[in-house]
Amino acid sequence: MKACVGVLALQGAFAAHEQALAGLGVETAQVRTPSDLAGVDALVMPGGESTTMSRLLETSGLFDDLKARLSDGMPVFGTCAGMILLATDVLDGRPDQRSFGAIDITVQRNGYGRQVDSFETDIDVAGFATPFHAVFIRAPKVVAVGTGVNVVASHDGVPVLALQGHVMVASFHPELT
Image 1 (cartoon, rainbow, N blue to C red):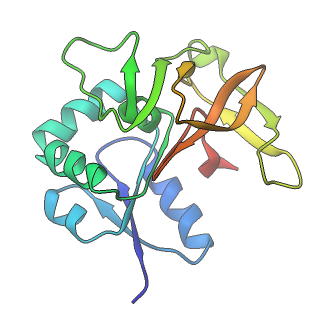
Image 2: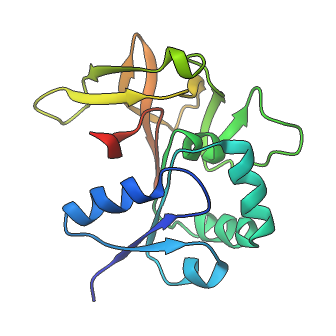
């Protein structure tokens, strides 16, 4: 049986992730409810607005089920807001914003600046033969990394792609390139 990768579809750039995965021949499903989550083998948490996504995870009833699946080792890839939601510590989140604490990093929301400060650049990714073109849109900045985290790519000395166990996060939007 072919694995199915869920794409969290509460808010944000979920359609672009679905298209990128489909282009790779990956079966996908939109995840909006706990029953949707139960039917997937892995999950992509897209960019968007992290405080809104946090609230929607609560109101949809997904937060606790997703936390349990992450604790059980379900593979997850979080981009931009997804990175914020998976981080252990968020420096400038709202007091009611929850994160999963699934990867031992500290992030600053919009750490690279406002929308007008968004940028594109090529980054060297460990294991890639050529640089990867990365798009940073109101991107979070990693300000601390725990000892168990493997930094896979950096920009100007700051981690932008990291992996810890079954959790991978990116400050940028790989689905756009």
